[in-house]
Image 1: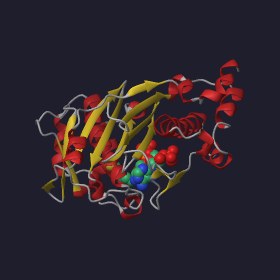
Image 2: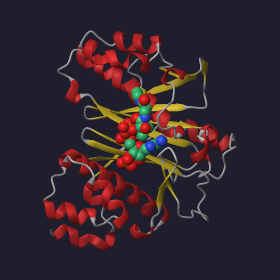
Image 3: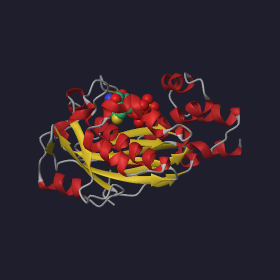
Length: 285
Ligand SMILES: CC(C)(COP(=O)(O)OP(=O)(O)OC[C@H]1O[C@@H](n2cnc3c(N)ncnc32)[C@H](O)[C@@H]1OP(=O)(O)O)[C@@H](O)C(=O)NCCC(=O)NCCS
């Protein structure tokens, strides 16, 4: 495995901590980050916000051996988190990562060279609605070709939703890789499956109608969730995110290799895997 290429997922739905246990986990974060977890009203959302932050710390600790308390994660103007500690001495010129949480999962992807975005979605909660009704407000999110792919997945509503959320994840993962927040014209990025199979685990993009082969998209299924990982050239990052990278003009053979590396499966971690070694006492709670 190439160092710095990580795909992790945690099933937050299968973790049912007591109040005491949950607050002990929150205490693993620096005091300044705890309100970001506790601001959520629903306990399920608090759990996901906490796991997301612990996953990021586990990543920095595993790759760079930085203590949890010394890890500094900042955000770009548009909100994309990045590691602010020095990574000098590591051969990861453009180390970057991204997280996503929805349904039962929190997922994380990181890359040392390409920029990366990840998105997870489940349609579990919407299944009772008629797809036609549910899709209507999202008409302007997809191009005609993309809607044709959605409708070709039917007639079973389950399959229509499945394809809708695959395309949704693809768009979100692209937006998140580039670091755009709100305000991107979603029709500029049109996704397609190069093999013609709408259930393929690989997809590509046309930007402003032009095929862009510098971008690679992989789709993964975790239970009934779709996850998409987008990898692309660092030069495509928005300005505030680009400033956090060291080799932006990297269109080298090593970048091509990184883009075309075989798709990496997600490792499923337990919440307990996110506890730093010097806090093993948490297990006695
Ligand atoms: C952040 C954004 C890009 C995605 O948010 P989301 O899908 O609701 O949430 P996800 O769980 O996938 O991702 C949230 C995480 O993305 C990260 N994030 C936030 N802003 C980001 C940005 N500009 N770029 C990349 N990642 C970002 C954060 O880590 C955040 O988690 P945290 O707040 O717990 O730290 C949001 O700005 C957005 O949805 N933009 C609109 C895109 C759109 O119109 N989509 C419609 C259909 S495709």
